[in-house]
Length: 144
Image (tube, rainbow, N blue to C red; front, side, top):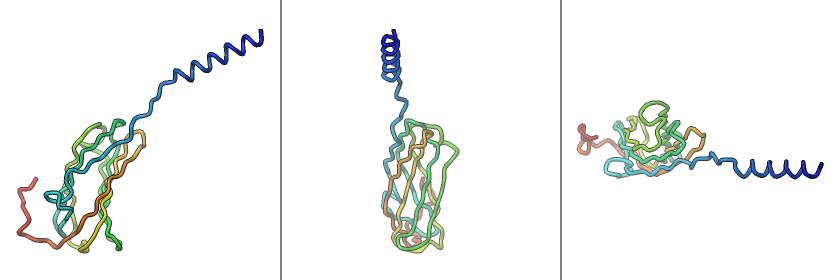
């Protein structure tokens, strides 16, 4: 009798584990579509840098963090998106203009674009960019 009970419990436990649903969702994905005007990978001092990316987050977007830091220096620009049109959605085109201060040193920078979903999973896309001197001949106030 004891063996029968143990066998029934073992089969029940195996059936429970085998039928347990896998609730994991895929990590978010990010694909840059444009970094800098016409995907130049450049930003001008005292202007804004066009940044566009396609985001897919099965677990729904919780936050987006943009960090641009100087290579070999300490200058850094950080922007967090924790509410608004990108939050709580699964599939979105990120399109923003990131302000580059006038005092940003010229030179090489590294862009980190991190998406966190509501399950706590993150993905970071990276790109090298260059901060160049402001050139009014390349500035277009009507730019999207």
